[in-house]
Image 1 (cartoon, helix red, strand yellow):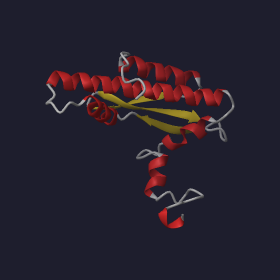
Image 2: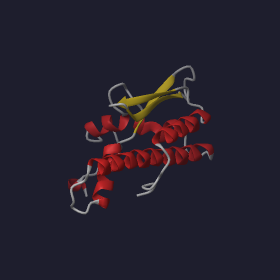
Image 3: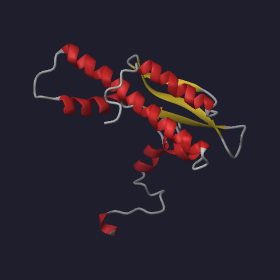
Image 4: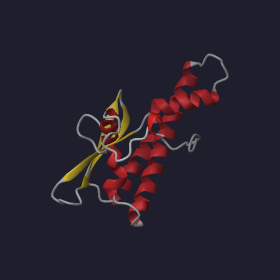
Length: 154
């Protein structure tokens, strides 16, 4: 896993992500907290069709998923101490946010090079106030997509 040894505090990486997004022209950012930890960033993109409106986006970071992978990688079947669990969780936070920073930087590079538009790369994360666009089309069995292949269609 990339960045699994990152020593950059999550708070520093979160600030970097906000700065990168700000340079790309987003209109604002809001941090999403759970139990005192930042678990996502909300921001708005200018609507390319109607510049007076904005498109809300929520970038989530799933620290628990990263922690699970790290735990499996480091597991030696022993019982973990409280200190080891805390260190592993902190490493998972650092890794998750560094991965998000890398992803955002790559997406913004594609935009800068004219390979994609901002709404295009952030479309899965467009937020309706309850869930993102990807979750909406997944809940509808991806029927909104032009090609819905399943085992019965191959």
